[in-house]
Image 1: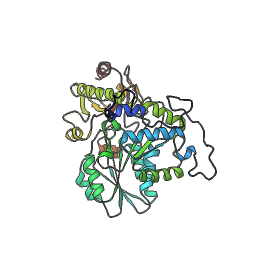
Image 2 (image 1 turned 120 degrees about the vertical axis):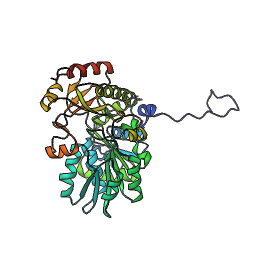
Image 3 (image 1 turned 45 degrees about the horizontal axis):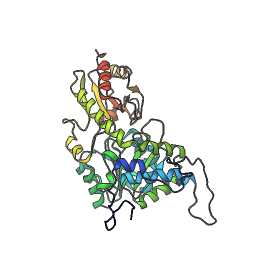
Image 4 (image 1 turned 90 degrees about the vertical axis):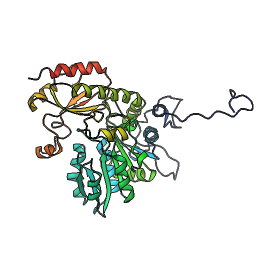
Length: 396
């Protein structure tokens, strides 16, 4: 009993910690040396071990102490039994798919996936004897119709890139569970702050930690989280594929995660403010943001997302050349790929995330040459709105 507890009184139980607190404190490891408050960077490829100890501690195996601390923190945030940190988001998605599927298996995937993921599923996966069927992410009936007896995986994004479609995750997870099929969600755009897919029955969740989790545009990494069995299978694949995270990258991601909840509050607010401004601007033809009433997934987003994040897409009333030129005329918003950092960025998907797709495929997906994607950072919303207003004023 604590010295502060009166004699005869029941000790007060601590309250369940919020995600904000867990982001700062979860995952502390016993190996921290010298009482360090911050997890040290164990920049060592290998470690001493007692004779006969299995498994060996080896950084390529994902059990370097810096990696272990981050993995414990991320598992806690996702409500998972275990997590695995990898060298990039693509390392995470490829490792996850190949840990579930083998030759002769079938994958049903959302048609609007990130370009890199689509490229992997269209080019590399079929070479391994795995079939892939792409379906509209918004239509659960289409997912059910695409399932075959040898389907092993359903794959979608919590919020799609770049048109910000929001599938009915709980419905898709239920379809997978009822048929004994694994489900994998790329929750990069949502983060554990805005959606925790494992809570509604998804088997594996992945993130590009390069984005919101790292949060400072200075590290590349990926994350998988799920049951211990699923993560052990992914770890086995990672050892063969070589996608382990560098200890210094793990350190930087853990540092970023500590402020995730605070940053997402501002990203969510900026996304909402900028999308409303753009929706009312005479030089803007269309805006995509799940919190806008005219977004096709507005009702689903209100049900499955706690916030819509800081990514907003729009088409100006301009030619493709004018849109590209306008994207380079901002004062605060930098013209660069990626997203989820503290600074605001702008990119054209036709030049970046979906450049590998042929024009006909981009058109089929609704990704025009005029489409502009904003990743809103943590600057003041008024400054970002002013920056956009000044740039839009340059259009003819």
